[in-house]
Length: 149
Image (cartoon, rainbow, N blue to C red; front, side):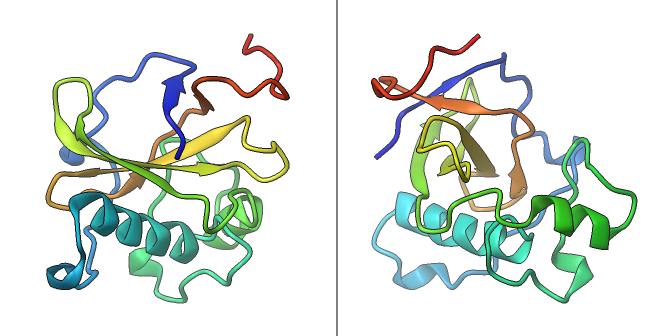
């Protein structure tokens, strides 16, 4: 499991009214725990939104823009996102996220050997899923990772 440290300050992480987001539609009644539900929701989110090597959803209503994107069309955005995160590396945390109850699931960025992470954030009831627009680093930092600047 990864523990995350932020490389930049985290501000208003779960203000659903201020960000584009998606609610989880995973059947949650059979999951064993809140982190397991959050992981299932986030795994679907990163796949559907084109961050892994899997094909993204064809339902454009399920695509969630980040705060800033590289591209002006969904085709360009999805091409840029493609294979940037490693599927199956999700590490969930649910609890206090700087004063707001919610869940965060971190994923390894491809090609970083676990030294750089991105995270999907959501409320404690699995709503307002969105990709945090900043990088994270593992803690404690593995010896093979260079220090953060």
